[in-house]
Image (cartoon, rainbow, N blue to C red; front, side):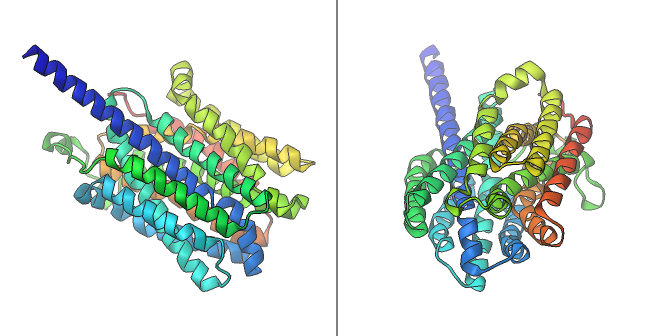
Length: 397
């Protein structure tokens, strides 16, 4: 009997380890696939002969696709499991990525970005829901590490794509290589994903507050707003840092990905240090300090006298943004104000809309004002995160 109990414990430990590894690899893929698009944006703008406003409208297609997909993904994951949804999203991403490197007509490009955004948004919701469950089963803080893998994937994607383009390899061949790597990772990671998501027990659901008029509780909305601002900053770095370097400082298009590279390096380091920083500072301080750091970084970007100083500013933005979203997603996983799948779907929709729709608004408004004005505005919004932080506290289980 004792031997049987030990065997069961070993099996459960191995299963949790497999699920944790699969979650890490899929977070890497999410960052890898979406960041590989960043160095291609200046090429797309040149190929389509778009100004900032036109490019903003094009990027809006990605955001619309994501916004439509995310609210439905939570319910689909409950029915089909995260493995199916993640696998489908990865398949769409690796299929569409090469087309983003060659399409030269606005309508096909808009359709491709719409579907790309749909896949990215669905991938994010399904994966974060799995991450919440795996973190809970692991009984230890894991969310910063999971999101750290997303940042590492983003860093790897932008560095590899920038390196390939700088070496003279065509955008099409570079994206085909990225897609091949995504396929390889999916083959390794998908078997360890959750084939089904357990529904929450009735006694848990009965404790959850009924939202007024169908709206989520205020705490959930505030968490979503904080994630929106943080992801807006990330989206601005991904989609507009290269344009900012080429338009403001006449940096070569082949090296336009350097700004996002510096951003991704410090974000990756910050997220992998997140567990230790949480122990050292606590949730409330780490969120407030992070928001202030990111705001200072953007102010450095808009006041930089030389493009190399801009890289320093983006490094500060990456460090500041690194742990805000992981902490917020952990809070969603601990709260009992509404169902975790529904709450995570709501927060993810608000968060990823900042990443995917925000850059479109930056382009449209930036064409009327300037990118410097928009970056300054985002810096002020980051300070709002520090103000809202104390209103979104959730007790540890």
